[in-house]
Length: 262
Image: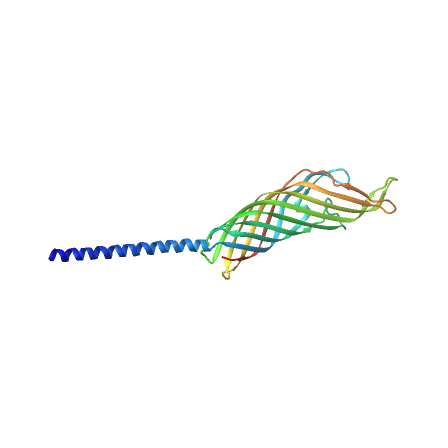
């Protein structure tokens, strides 16, 4: 009887230990499952908009031909004070850390008076479109302040419209006033674009924070025409002259709002 009692106690303890082990294992499995589910739940569409200040360095083009036949190089700092980019991002958070999407911006360029692209007294309007895909990594997705970094590439399209009156040589000698109307489109590639910022969580669906970008690009295609009108004569339209590519860097800083649905 004593042996039977002992065996019963051992069996009971064994059953209890197995039950506790199973319960512990189940709890751990549930915890892991909840962590995986939580990570998966932080996925979904995301939209962001930002207002930025843009600055540039480098060349719009090199080795163009001026109106007087001289070689000319147009630097971004000669042609513009700054720009005001409005950017939109559309994408998807694959999980709490990885975002993939596309970005696009329209930039109002504040033209600078210069002898090459915007002579004194001329009306100069410049704007630029840029767009491309982006991959981004969220560094602290569980934090209320979540820094991030991104990498992308894309395309850029600069549109320029310059018009005004100036003196041009006359076939009879001397100069005469002429109205010049020039429309140019410069297209090129953004070879690399790095972005960084931070999302401060306001609600479950809204975050705000800073954004900064730095990109390297080049305008590789230049098209457009120039129309010269002299009083009493028919207008003459001709294509803009050929130029060489020039590399440039573009930098932006701004404030960004993020709308998401996880």
